[in-house]
Image 1 (cartoon, helix red, strand yellow):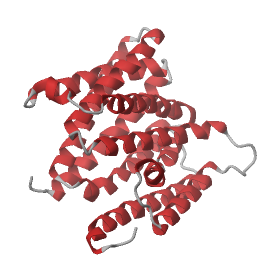
Image 2 (tube, rainbow, N blue to C red):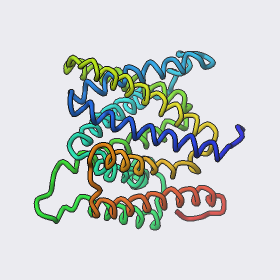
Image 3 (cartoon, one colour):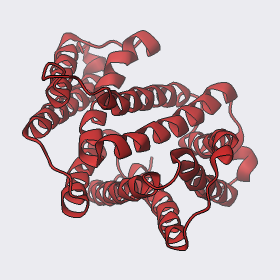
Length: 297
């Protein structure tokens, strides 16, 4: 078994989350000027090339990375994630970075809620209570009873649902496919899907925006590499809570560079959602550790 390095895993995760936040800010800038599908398509070209390059360097090469017993599920994962990225970037344009991520933070709760009916996993009453409290936090963020409800707020919620489905399918294939195989299919299937759609929305980029596009592609590759390394050196359940730091980085960028405002209801709702999410992660880990003793979820 590979030795675990918790401290290195934490710093790699923190670095990945910071770069993801920068990546989201660049995505918002480009998508506010150009078609979202085209922006994500170019980003995925670089991502797919990055995935293929990594696969080619490993034992067995590309053939080994592409070998799976569930090709349709793997392809569906890649397509769902590519579509989710498009929806989330659209949310950045419509709502801004802070409010989009505040709503999107509910995705771990959606994974917990859907793991029972979709994967047959047992979710006990404690986690159901946490899920309910988390959704209360989302309602505080969205304020559906305050005047006319803004339907744009449903866009990041749709993205969270799509990402939760992607996460569940990833968990489903993990019993037979390695992380390297899933990563390969994520980049290649997603790249093929978004190219088939995005190529029809091509727009010429200004010279300066090619620089931003190059930086977007670079941050996408670096962030995913750091995330892969984080999960290689440390247990995923131990470092996953640090993924919420992306909210902090997003808030700093949104307020400091993009003139966004953190409304009190968004701040309060986000704290509730994050605390509920951290509890579900902690409880899932406790249950996994206590299953041998007949512990209840």
